[in-house]
Image 1 (cartoon, rainbow, N blue to C red):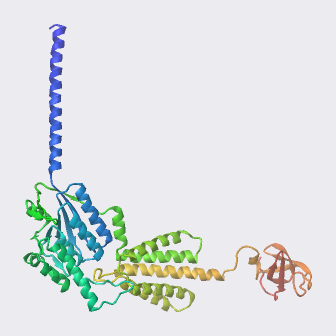
Image 2 (spheres, helix red, strand yellow; image 1 turned 90 degrees about the vertical axis):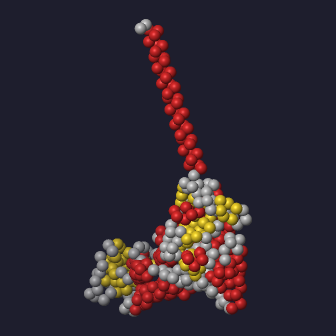
Image 3 (spheres, rainbow, N blue to C red; image 1 turned 120 degrees about the horizontal axis):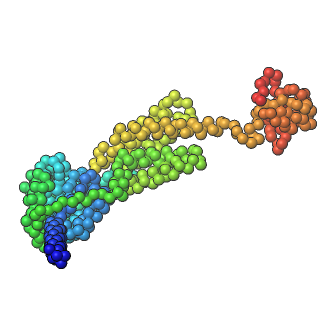
Length: 458
């Protein structure tokens, strides 16, 4: 075969390779596009968690989750709930965002043993779909005043006004959701609670599901009526589920408002500021104490802080200081420990936080706090009895040896600490006698004779 034929054959094979490569590339791109289209078409269920007390940080988290679901064009927002209730302002904020959400919202009391009590009950009934797992309960939504710095007395008229306002708010959305308004009102007026079956039979919720997967299967293809009256059919075939978690900032703030952490911040703040006041110039304890105290004040705005608990903690601090000043054989110290433990128990007490500050945390924090407060105050008291260790003042009370005789009214010389000083005395003191320094006037010392046998410090 000549060179020309070989070249033609190679060109032919090379062309086939190019065509095959292009075909493979085209098929690959097509497959990627199909996969991307399938992923884009897959319904997204964004899952949020309402666990713990309903408070501003949790409300912000839920609000941001609903906004994120709208931005991502989710098909459904699933809020799993286990709450004893919480603050009415935070509850109202959450309900408003649920009612205005462009994405359908299902609130699901889960797992078994969970509850949607008090504020959680109203949030449950505000959802497009209300569901509960077996072994859960909801209700007991009577408004209460949490104990705080000052508790306003509530008479029958004021209590009736509060209950009527709460029931009107509940009716404003429960009727549009097609739920039983009369029965739901009893959760407020009579503090009534319902099991999942009682809630289903009473038309308070829409369904009971064993788990989230069963719930979403039941909702697939279900027609719902949005709060604005529009009909919408849920399409959840081959759905994908994504979690919306608390941000780092929200986790940090949520940690601060926990009763145990609030108590620790309060103690560390008080100890840091106390250290700075008793030992000026240390700086670091003052900085740490100031930050911790401000964080504790932030938590005070959210937690139901009892004034009696705060006063008991202040009393404990006073008793620790008095123990360092007076000899009580540990009575004041023991009283301070007991006072601080009682203060921790009374510090936060409400139906939402029945445990308050845990006893283990209170005991573990109280004992070191008592020791450090006592130890720092002892250092302060001892420092007041110390003589000045620098300058001329350190010579006061020291003893020296006469090297040039002192005549009444005339100056002589004495040796103190190996140094020669000009000295004067009211009486005559011969050479070799011991003297005690009374005053320092510039570079001259006023001295007096020391009885024989007194030791001289050299």
